[in-house]
Image (cartoon, rainbow, N blue to C red; front, side, top):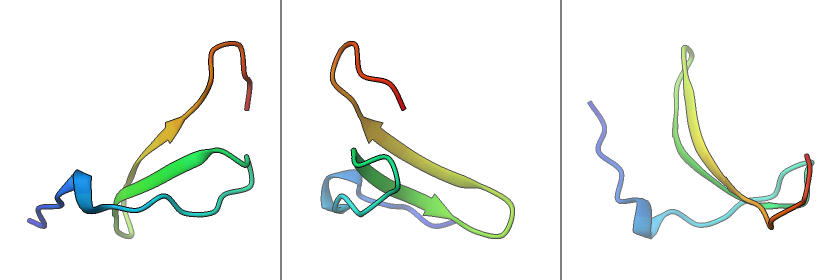
Amino acid sequence: MKITAVSEVTSGPNPHDRDAWLIYSNNHAITGEISQNPGATI
């Protein structure tokens, strides 16, 4: 198991032009967080 300190993850580029943090990724699953303003859509 890999433990990730979310506070140390930096936002990376994405096709939606939003702040996005890739928390975990392997061949079977991806976990991330996307920041979005109220009323905005993807």
